Length: 222
Image (cartoon, rainbow, N blue to C red; front, side):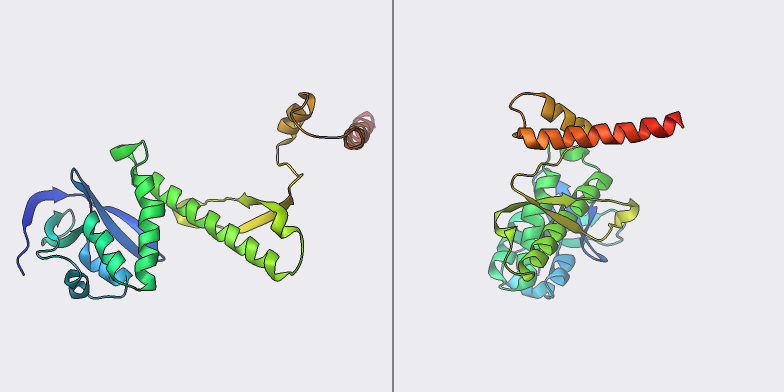
């Protein structure tokens, strides 16, 4: 099968699709390109299986930095056609990863200036947020009847160097609850009509603050 060979050297962006499974994305003037062998492996298919779903000739040979020989790559349109025609869970996962997470990040207003580091951070935190919400919702539902159907969620994001996230977690909060720093809480309460709070709650909060201040002043005096 003959493929057109593009003689320009391309610098691919190496992205983490799954654990220890990088995918290279090549950004060119005409759009995004993907290494055919990596796309096939991500869906547990052979390259020939992908090419059979496409109009021939399919793909293009591109020279990639770090490679000694040209590499067969698929255009973004060909990738869309492949994941549409191959009815496998791996194809659906790849489509979500590309369409919902990676492509929007690459097309962010930063454009070509988007660095690999910032893109990895964005993708890692997006994946972690999804895990946190999913785990929190699952645990809430499995606990049985409760307020989870009419509540909101607090998602705690954390990020460490080298893409080592901490265990994901989320917290259920009631619809009448708010999340704010202490400084932000004071501003919310001080501004009329900004935060719906009744007199009883204000008295309780003021009393608690006075007690804490009296305790601290007592220790300072001693």
